[in-house]
Structure formats: C-alpha cells, structure tokens
Amino acid sequence: MTLDVATGRQSDLRRRAEQLFPGGVNSPVRAFGSVGRPPLVLSAGDGPRVRDADGAWYLDYIGAWGPAILGHGHPDVVEAVRDAACDGFALGATSPREVELGERIRDAVPSVERLRFTSSGTEAVMSALRLARGATGRDLVVKFGGGYHGHGDSMLVEAGSGLATLGMPGSAGVTQAAARDTIVLPYNDLVAVSEAFGRHGAAIAAVIVEPVAANVGVVPPAPGFLEHLGDVTAASGAVLIFDEVITGFRVARGGAQGRYGVMPDLTTLGKIIGGGMPVGAYGGRADLMRHVAPEGGVYQAGTLSGHPLTMAAGVATLDRLTPDVYERLDATGTALEAGLRAAADEAGREISINRVGSLLTVFFRPQAPVNGAEALTADRDAYARFFGGMLDEGILLPPSQFEAWFVGAAHGDAEVAETIAAARRAFAA
Ligand code: PMP
Image 1 (cartoon, rainbow, N blue to C red):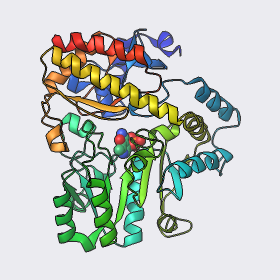
Image 2 (image 1 turned 90 degrees about the vertical axis):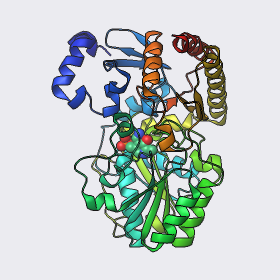
Image 3 (image 1 turned 30 degrees about the horizontal axis):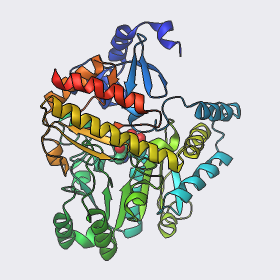
C-alpha cells in the first residue's frame, strides 16, 4: 500500500519501469500507447476505484482486465487470501482449497465434468488445444479473426487484444508451421465455418471461440452461431472449445454456455475464478479429460497450478457471485449503456455500443460491429480523445478501442451517474 510513498512518485516509477520492462510494462495493453497518454502506475484499488502512485483516484472500468467483478480488494477475498497465506503458500501437493474451487466450477459451468488448474489463461488454452489434438489425432485448429486466446504460438494469428491495439497481424517468432495449423475465419460467419469443414473437416482437431468476443471490443454471437459450431464439430468429430477466460462467471454464473444454452466439449477459464490472483483452468467432458496425464498421454503440468492463495481468492469470489449479483450487474450495464447512448446523441456523436451484461464497448463507428474486421474499422483517434477526456474527469476506461469495459458489482447508481456526466462532457469536447 505504501510502495509509492517509499519509492517515489508516478513519473519516477514510470521512468524506472521503462528502463526495466519493454515498453515500461509487463503486458502490452498496459502501455497506453494507442490512447496517447503515459501509462498509469496504479498502486491501490478499493471497490470500483483505483489510485495512481501520485494519489489520484479514478473510477475504474479496466477491472484488472476482468477478474475484479466484486470490485478491488473485497474484504472477504482479502481475508481468505490472508488465511491461506498463513497456511504456508504452495506446498507442492493437492490442497483442500483446490478441491473446493474445482467443485464450485464443475457445479456452475455446464460443460465441465472434470478440470485442471493452470496459472494463466494462456496455459489453459495451450493445454486445451494440445488435449484436443491428442484426443483426435488431428492437427488443424479453427479460430476467429479478432479472437484472443492468450499468447501461445498457434493463437497469435489475426488475434485481438494487444495485437489489435498495436495493429500487429501476428507475432514475429511464430513458425510458419504453427501458423499453418491455424485456420482463421470471420466471427459470426456460419457459411465460412461450413466451408472450412467441407474442405478440411477430417483434419480439424478443434474450433476455439470466445462465445462472446471481447478482445476487439465486445461482439456478441449472432443468433445460431454458437449452435452451428456445436453442430459442425459434432458431425466431424472435432472438439468445440469455448474460451470463457473473460465470459466465465461474467456473463452468467454458468458463463456464456449457461447464458446461451450451448454446450462446448471443452472450456477454458481464467480471471474471475482466481479472484485477482494468477489463474487459468481447462475442463470439459470426462472422456476427453481422461487423456490428460497421468491418466492419459497428453502431458500438462505446473509447479504453482492450483496455488492455495489463488484457490482461496477464487472460492471467496465465486461464493459472492449469487443470482442477485448478476441481476445487479445486468441492471448497471443496462443503465450505463442507456446513459452513454443519450450522452453521445446529445453531443451529436455517431457511436455504437455492444453489450452483454456487464461487458460493453463504445465503438466509434455508427454501426455495431458483428466481427473482428468490422470492429477494427472503428475510429481509434476518436476513442483516444474520448479516453483522454474521461481520464481527465477521473474515469479510467480501457486504454484501447478494442478492449471491453468491465463493470463490477461495486459499480452502483452513483458511479453510473458520475460516468455519464463525464461522458457528456467528453463526447462534447
Ligand atoms: N483467452 C481470452 C479470451 C482472454 O481474454 C485472455 C486474456 N485477456 C486469455 C485467453 C489469456 O489469459 P492470460 O492473460 O491469463 O494468459
């Protein structure tokens, strides 16, 4: 809490960070480059707000990029982590807290019969893809343009999140072979999916999809899209993977699969299930999970997997995500969307908003995008100006047009009103 006081103010910390870390950050989206502002150094969070190292507070819509669904530093989560720390951190064997969190996830997420914890969403995705390939004996994986599934080599093709923000079509250092094994299709395009399976069906191990795309800004699934993915994968023997790292426990307790009633074969999770601690998980059909070592021949491991502090934070978080919390999150999202639309109208700004529950994006383009390519045509400069205007009003939005706003349970009517009042001025400026 007193790190900033002990070591200097924000500009000094920023300068020292720049010397240490590429771009001054340990994850590219934190660099604020696309919004033309210096990156914030945040030293504390409390409920819906975060404080920078100079002591200024902001109403926060980054939400730790997803995990902070209860707000920052929820006292019950802090206490659970403190208790777990007193038990000695990682002990290198299965701990009771892993079983507790695993059971909660299995009971909430419809497709998950068995699961494995990892330390990040990236690892969860890499492991799920390896499992799909191992179980099917096939190589190809279908993903969708603008979908972000962590930074495993084969997923860094037409990816969203930081790559969309930086305008990078892919990453240097990914072999052609890895990229060749990835087929990229337009999101929400049922015909393209059918055609790809018509051409390559017997070689496709898996389709991986964000069931609500949230890494090019929010793009909801078109009616029938997820069902179609279920049909074509079932018919061809491919594995359908829902990457619910963002949507899990976010758009409903049962994730997007719960909200839309479509069952994948495997699900990847992260973020909320760790309550703000490093985490990932993959799980699904028991007959698939049987292929994972030591039961089966697909190897996957992790020294800190199922870390007790993470598990404690996850259990405390999931136990507070009751039906009334989701109702409130939806209501807050609805009010925020309506207010932002009215504010933009008033200022004569042509924007569109995509929202699913507590995930939303204000796109600086007149029509709401239905896929990654459309989302990428939004006016980044207009977003950057809006971002700057809001920041000057004390409202911290994601520092990219292509990232979702995360509304949390700590955001209430007062915070929505504050945001809309600021947006009125920022749209008008
Ligand atoms: N999948 C999705 C859908 C994500 O949004 C992310 C991260 N934002 C990941 C995977 C990767 O997770 P992590 O950053 O924990 O590796």
